[in-house]
Length: 176
Image (cartoon, rainbow, N blue to C red; front, side, top):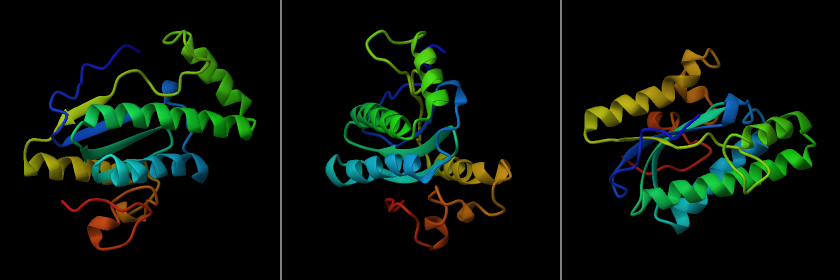
């Protein structure tokens, strides 16, 4: 897949972003791989000024709404750090079938590494109004319901939906 036509044109503004595992491989089916994403967001919130307003992690992709002084840098750092950590985790688990597919996917994209984890590019959309913000939050939180994983958005463990109904989630998010 080629580079996305979506780009972060105003890196200090609020954006809705999507990132997908190559070949839509189901890597986020175990807590330890999802925790890598959550820990990276925690780090970026505490150390890099990332403001995270909503998120959902599904088995092969994630969506989030965020803002930072340099969102491009945060997204790039997130991508490279999480890819390395997840590949290390897959190696420790001896997940050879997934690693073999990641090795093969790399052939179409990279020459400087052994694996390709994330699809090229990032799907980023500028959020320029409160109505768009609400639409994107609703979309994010409805994803697990649409897939039939849960009946209520706040029941999905790897989502910020619980925060928006007054409950505590796995990851602190910023007030919107």
